[in-house]
Amino acid sequence: MNTKNGSLAASIIVLLIALAASMAAGCVLGAADIGIGDVLRVIASKLPILGRGIEVAAGTESIIWHLRLPRVILAALVGGSLAGAGVVFQAVFRNPMADPYLLGTSAGASLGGALAILLGIGFSLPGISGTGVMAFAGSIGAVFLVYGIARIRGRVSTATLLLSGIAVSAFLTAAVSLLLLFYRENMQHVVYWIMGGLGTARWDSLPGIVPGMLVALTIIGLSSRELNMLLLGDETAAHLGVSVDALKRRMLIVGALLAALSVSVSGVIGFVGLIVPHMVRLVVGPDHRRLLPTSFLAGAVFLIIADLLARSLVPPVEIPVGIVTALFGAPFFLYLLIRRKKGVA
Image 1 (cartoon, one colour):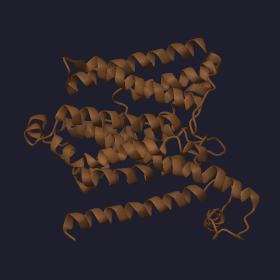
Image 2 (image 1 turned 45 degrees about the horizontal axis):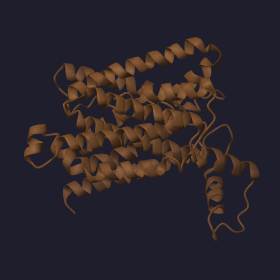
Image 3 (image 1 turned 45 degrees about the vertical axis):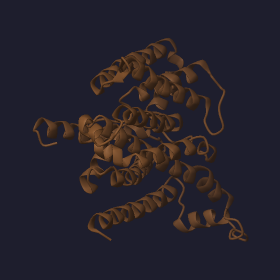
Image 4 (image 1 turned 135 degrees about the horizontal axis):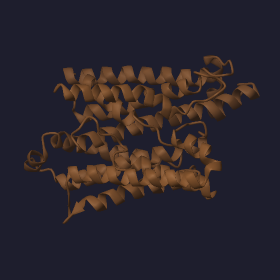
C-alpha cells in the first residue's frame, strides 16, 4: 500500500469510527435515559432469525426504532449528500466558498415549501410529504431557471451562472417574504421549516431519497478524475480530453439533485456543503477520488452532531438544526474571507 492509499484508508477508518460514535450518541442521548445496550437490543430484535426471543420494553423500542434511529440515519444521509454536493460545486466554480445552494436551490425549495404549507397542499409521494415534494420541485425548477438564463448561444460561463443564481435567489426569497406578508397566521410554521430540521424523520422518509442520492453520488464518483482535471482550468482540461461544458452541466445537475433531495426531507440546512469539503480538503488534499468519500462521511458526522446539539441544548425546546450549522458555518465563512483577503487561500 502506497502512502496516499494508506493515508486515505486511515482517514476513512477514523471517519467511520467517528460516524459510529456519533450515531450511537444520537440514539442514546435525549430526554429519555436509554443506554447503548438498550439500543443494541432494539436493533437486534429487528433482525431476522437473530432477533427471536429478544424482549425490549415497548417504550424503549418506540423511542429508538421509530424516533431516534431513523432521525440519525436521515441526518447522516442529508449531511453526507450536502457535503458531496459542496465538493461538486466547489470544483465546478473552482472556489472554496461555493456551496450547493449557489444556484437558487435553497430559495426555490423555500418557495415550494412555503406554498405547500400556506396553501395546505396535502398530496405526497412515497416517503416524501407534500411539503417535501413542493420543495424538491421548487429547488430543481430554480436550478433549471438559473441555467436557462445563464445559457447564451449554447454556452454557459461560470460568471454568468453565478450572477444568475444570485438574481434568481433574491427574487424567490422576495416571493417567500411576500407570501408570509399575506399569510401571517402560518408564518411561524413556514419560518421554522425554512430554518431546517429533522424532527419529522421516519423510516418512510428514506425510500424516497436514497435511490436518487446513490445515483448522484455514483455519477460524481465516476467523474472524479475529470473533476481533478477541471481544477487545472477549462482550457487545460479540454486539452486533456475533457468535454468541459458537458462535465459542468452533468455535475451541476447531480449536485443540485443532491441538494434538492436533502432539502425535501429536512428543510434548508446551510453551511454543511461549504465548510465540510473545505475542512476535509485541508486534510486529504484536492484529489476528488479521496475528497468525495471523506467529505461524505465527515458531512454525515457533522450533521448528526449538529442535530444532537439542536435537540439537547435547551430541552424541551428543539432548535432548528439550520441555526446550529449556521453558528458553526458563519464564523468559518468569515475565516475563509479573511484568508482570501490576505491572499493565503
